[in-house]
Length: 425
Image (cartoon, rainbow, N blue to C red; front, top):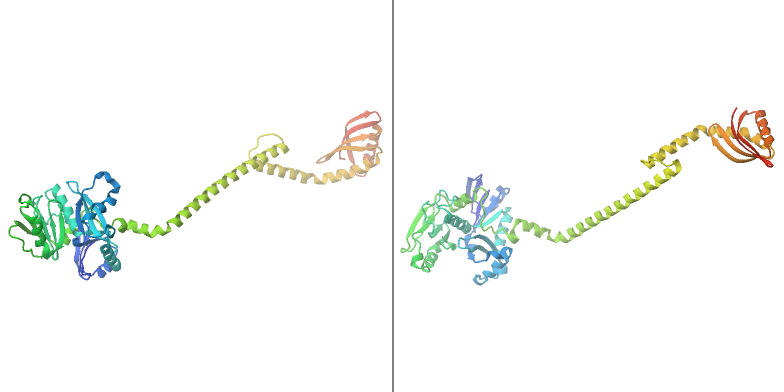
């Protein structure tokens, strides 16, 4: 994790590299060089507290999701700029119920993000420095000392004390009432005295806790203000790194929310394609519905054809169970074709052998002819039974010997009926 302070001089950016909760490297370098060297690191950027106003506002908890929309108008009378030009970020609630809010100009946000983007850095969080100190002050009220400041301050520091934090260029003033102010280092004494005189003597801190970073001197303060001055063992950036290096630390007042969040940036990128994506999804859904309807129609048509094939099979081959009518029909037709192929020569031979005898018999007519492999069945109408004997004689005298078998013979008035079977002799 790379933690850097985005100061005005982009050629002298203080930075700290933290790995598994331990500070591995730190220094001062140009923003462009940091972007080239640590482009793949998880980057947390600390911005000047002077550009971000921290304040408290009374917001009823029942507002719920509407809180974010209501805050700009609850603070409108205290703002010098139009609410449309400002970015609002909510923080934690104080013990007395006020909701803390960070306010920053959108133009300032655009400047910071533009500088980072030009250097090739994509921050995971953009935090005002004053917010980290404020977060520590809130935690201090719940315990004697917040765990993120293990070696920074005196563990016997009173919970309700006023605090003045001094860095090389900035100063941060915290009051027990959760009031906070960030200003230039040389202006700290003026604002402290001004704030001091606004309170009654009963509310005045005793003493004022003054912390100055390692290597930086303290400042002259009014003599009537009791002070307890302590030098930190590290810089404020090192102190902030200790805070941020804790396992899964909550990040108070992350300015990359709303229109500046990483998720919303993707939403803005995809916004122009929403209509096209919606049309595409609707078209796909319509295609799937149409395909489903078509599949159902084909299934019904297939079932209807199967029923027709079953009925046809039973009509041709007789009633009986039908499993797969198509395969059974194909198998039966193949068998029939094989049978016909095997006996196709017999019919010609039999018919050629019997035809001369039939033609030589006077008064004979064929009523029915049935062929089976190797034989012909004939139903004949004759003038009398003698004509049947004549037919038999003609067959016996023919060169192609045929054997005639009389199945039945009946004499009627003026005619005779006979059923005979002709086979090869």
